[in-house]
Length: 101
Image (cartoon, rainbow, N blue to C red):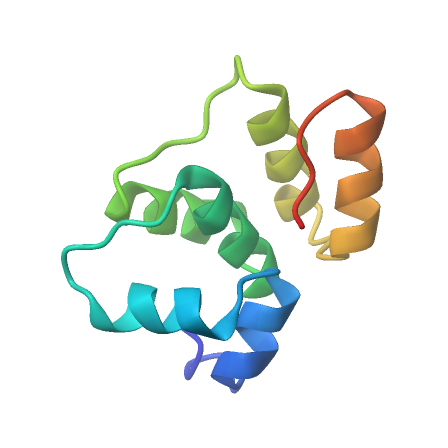
């Protein structure tokens, strides 16, 4: 997906607030599954559509839940093609949810 979008690895992991070593582990260790928060961060960093985000989450064993405020907030931003991590973090914080850091 990174290559398809014409992005560099460093652009994506930096925007997702993932350090280089963690990103390398995700890419190279086929037995490693990142946590849901990390996968959500990549959906934003990659500027995925809501359907693409659902596919990526599913591939990591996760799904968006309507009962999760974080999931609902991230889904709103993805659906509206708003990929500004600062803006998303502001809304997450306002609703008492963990922010991407």
